[in-house]
Length: 306
Ligand SMILES: NC(=O)c1ccc[n+]([C@@H]2O[C@H](COP(=O)([O-])OP(=O)(O)OC[C@H]3O[C@@H](n4cnc5c(N)ncnc54)[C@H](OP(=O)(O)O)[C@@H]3O)[C@@H](O)[C@H]2O)c1
Image (cartoon, rainbow, N blue to C red; front, side):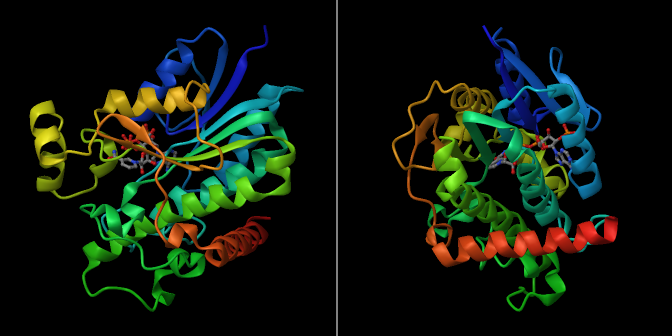
């Protein structure tokens, strides 16, 4: 029997490492992980730093070389980070949270599309922070304008408080994830090849490395909330790292029945739900504009790299 080939970013720590281990423990899989320094036993590792487009290209070349004539059955874009401000820039000159969470994955996705099998699953990790109705602890997005997000100095909606801008950079990047998945799901190619496109929102999942660049008190609270009693009481919709990781693995292996037409899956208090994403995430014009602007940003950056 042919093994299921899985390519995953963000499988080296946090709940993604739980997912990777679950996938590896299934004998029918061959798992490729993008990695910086941490590795997961049983996976095949290829270096990946999403803060560099050149690095993304090298990662994809490495995957393609290892695949030979083979195809990818599951692509999981789970890596993500959260800068404490909007001042840092990647080597390509883009705001880092947006560049790592959205633009690098957009590039990776575009490069890997020709290598995806018929019936492939494409899962990109988003966040409930994209939706103002979730009343998350983080400021929701004002827009999904890729040019403003890549170059915040052009953004006319910036707040006076840096912490709010940083939170918006994160929540906006996760809004971009849903819009990207929606665009892909609606494409002729996805329909023709019967791809299953899902944006996965793990819900608040304390204890991961996501807030490692946050203040001391944020990091402390993030650890304290791993105590199940406190987590369930103070963050009732939250999940354990194990539940978030195992659920993502279940989606990847097709163990979860996704209702027809749904592209947003949200884990809430251990239960996978399929709500509608935010109003901005459902906006068709925004979806098309984001794809076009992301291509424009990429093309300009790639010309400089050539
Ligand atoms: N935890 C939550 O409450 C929560 C809620 C909603 C959504 N999410 C999303 O869930 C995903 C996983 O987050 P997590 O909470 O498990 O956080 P985490 O523990 O910090 O894991 C993040 C993963 O992304 C990788 N990564 C980060 N920056 C990277 C870069 N520049 N290049 C390559 N890989 C990079 C990390 O690699 P290393 O192992 O090398 O560090 C790690 O594997 C993220 O997309 C996050 O935004 C998390």
